[in-house]
Image (cartoon, rainbow, N blue to C red; front, side):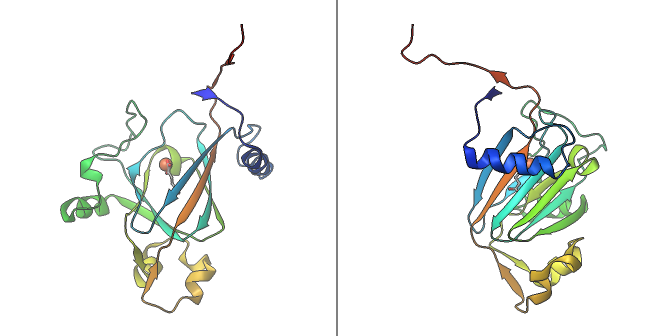
Length: 189
Ligand SMILES: O=C(O)CCC(=O)C(=O)O
Ligand SMILES: [Fe+2]
């Protein structure tokens, strides 16, 4: 990976995240900005060995539900070339794969708007994480399956049967140990 300076607003966020202590002495130097429209998600995957094994995610906009899965066949997470294990059989869009995927679900978390998610240890190195591509979540299902449901103020306040998703932006802040600093000379000699 080639290192480029973070834009100032992200650098400030990365420094602020460092002060939480979750990265130890490492200063996070990598930020991924993802936007999800209602009905969009991300297939179950692992983030791979490229990053130091802590992920912090700032959740903006919509709520969502992130689900954690045992990897197929083995408790040892396989590392693929691009660091992701997701495949067609992990695609939650079909009924069969949804069933087999659900049988590997370990837990789920409800991500409140303006919340911070910290993943580390087994939740990073052992389990896959994914977000189902659905436009809404059933309140009853969220309350029954999300490990942190009792701690979520917006669930306590909710009364409709479904929670509609709106646009969500996630800022995933990590530390990438092996970055190459390249200096480009534009128009120079
Ligand atoms: O948007 C999220 O909360 C998760 C994103 C993610 O898992 C990834 O980009 O690797
Ligand atoms: Fe991820």
